[in-house]
Image (tube, rainbow, N blue to C red):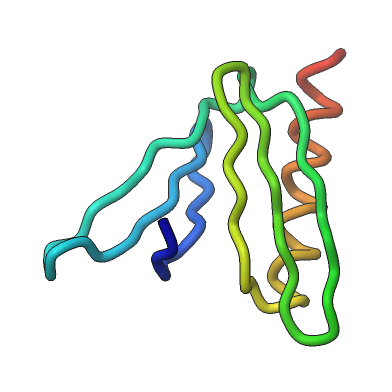
Length: 84
């Protein structure tokens, strides 16, 4: 399914907020300890983030390149800290 929305990092959790049937909805992705990996595929204008948690893989496409790099950096730091 393709939908537009916002990737939101809170102090301990990662969510994807989007509109479904006019109402605002959210998909819980993972709490930080359960995020296993994040991959960044850069395009010319937009990029794709693939976030893997212990249960599933979530691909978020058409993120502005600058925003994708910033999220990738933040999530990579979280994953690195989880491994300590």
